[in-house]
Amino acid sequence: MAGTFKFELVSPERILLSEDAEQVIVPGMDGQFTVLAGHAPVISTLRPGVLDAQLAGGRRRVFVRGGFAEVGPEHLTVLTQHMLDLQHIDAEKLASEVASAEQMLAEAKDDAARMVAIEAVERLKELRA
Amino acid sequence: MASLKDMRNRIASVKATRKITKAMQMVAAAKLRRAQDAATAARPYAERMARVLGNVTASVANKSGASPLLVGTGKDQVHLLIVMTAERGLCGGFNTNIARLARQDAIRLLKEGKTVKILTVGRKGYDSLRRDYARQVVDRVDLKGVKQLTFANAEDIAHKVLAMFDAGEFDVATVYFSEFKSVIAQKPTALQLIPATIPEGQASGSLNVYEYEPSEEEILGYLLTRNISTQIFRGLLENAASEQGARMSAMDNATRNAGDMINKLTIRYNRQRQANITKELIEIISGAEAL
Image (cartoon, rainbow over all chains, first blue to last red; front, side):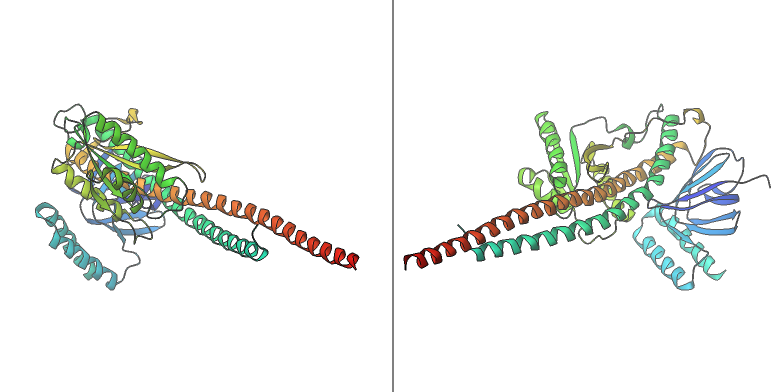
């Protein structure tokens, strides 16, 4: 593995994570992609899914509900409005997230609804894992 | 001349007032710290958003058919003024200043024959604008129960604005809020929201080198909608910090004034008391002399 890059996870309210990472798997709109150091610059929107980061200090998995990622050779910035850290999570929290996702599904229309459906399914998969 | 008892009461009441304003000042100072922290914490998101938006815009802008959120509807007939103020008063000129700026613009626009619509956020702005512009105020948002502003608050407002925009109810949207310069300086600011004012791509060197997934247009559309919420959120946070700053300095002034007043009243009270004693002495002495 060639070197590390700066990985930042930012929500509108604050910076959630700012660390050096070796590898991050990003749930891009057109499919998952893996970011390593020296990646070509990409701007991509995200679908709801799991960010899987290999940080200097270990693995970190974070669920994001949409957002977008800006990738450069030496940095990855993910802007998201809603995230859930899978590190300290319990079944109860997950269940409430699923419930809120399903509620959003009920309220959303066509395109957005499909997105949320994917999200909810993925959540449930998480739950089993 | 007021009696001694009246003056004692007066002093006691001013002292009570001073206690209250002092307490309010301290509460405002504590809240200010929190509001400032929130505003600082929110900055990175807005900055990165602006950077990406600048880049994307630079690579898309030349193409025709860009989103009306960026290039406008082609008209500027109907203006929407989003006036953000506080929920509560007793914070110096804070609310008045924002409302005044908005009112000036409203007057100017009306003079130019444009249509003005107003969306107020916060009770104070609504109270002060409805007097003159009752017909123009189309909607209002109250943040009364909100203790800590979250992005969801900003999104609610953004959804409202976007829904109106999609329905073709206005052409240009401007937000009015108070920019937090420092604890003693807050600057009422107008910021055009739609069509978006895009910061020039600062990273001109890295322009156009990005790949976009999915297409640039789709990303731009997504970013522009998000940008509205982000800008509104920024405005709300700046406003919250400004409000507490303004309240703090207003209450500081009030406390100092109350102190001055207490000093003055106390001096007057003591003079009066001494004058009374002297008068009584004179009466006693002259009574004794007459014997």
